[in-house]
Length: 285
Ligand code: NDP
Image 1 (cartoon, rainbow, N blue to C red):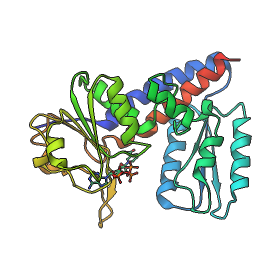
Image 2: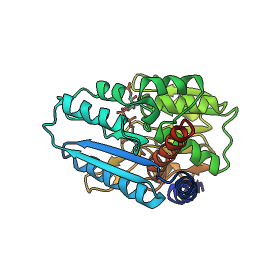
Image 3: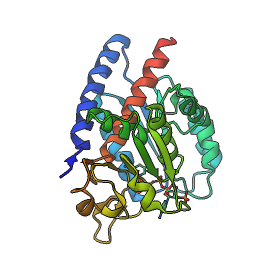
């Protein structure tokens, strides 16, 4: 039987710490850390994320602004908003909810956000910093995974870490963070041969492919730590991970559930990055 890594509880613990630090910051500086969230169009999932982000800001005592722009927003209107927020002293973090509608150029938007306010850590400047291990901001989901491991007392150094998925927002930065923590890292993807065999080598397996219940017990080593980043909607509307929880759980030593594992950590890490951005900006005043 695996120990269940309770992402909700760990997330609540970290949010309480952020709240305390934010209150101290506000008392010291006379203003609150501030986050602006931009959403373009009316994708219901994105709207839920934005609502949750605002709620999290309220919970930890941050100032927040939400810009809900219509689907037909032009590139120049969006860039003008980013420029305005870049120049706004009340705003320390800017997040533009992706994906953007097809007619908009995401890359230009990411490049336009001041790297010092890039709390998603998507700007190439911050991506480069992650590569060399000199972090300003850690990308939220992989940072959430590292916090789950750390707070569960799971040592990474010297472990075989297998990450399945190589996206820029999850797989690749996750590999870097595990590498910096001295793991021996393998990254797998859709062209990997003998995937099950590679996965069975893992002491720590991170599943991030977006395919419901894909990872079954035969792909997992006895006693492995299994981190499920996947978030998939079943036909009945229920959320499920990439890992077939019922078959894998008896074999693993630790496992994250979906929901309630990695998911709650992502927004918490966003709050942490916003606080860091505010502290950095304040130290330069
Ligand atoms: P992407 O679709 O950008 O990337 C998926 C990756 O999985 C790709 O690298 C792809 O390989 C690989 N892949 C797909 N199918 C297979 C397969 N059969 N075998 C091996 N590798 C495969 O997804 P994201 O990284 O954005 O997200 C991954 C999952 O994590 C999704 O379920 C998403 O919803 C979830 N997620 C959860 C978050 C959270 O807060 N918990 C935050 C962000 C994402 P290739 O590159 O070769 O195509």
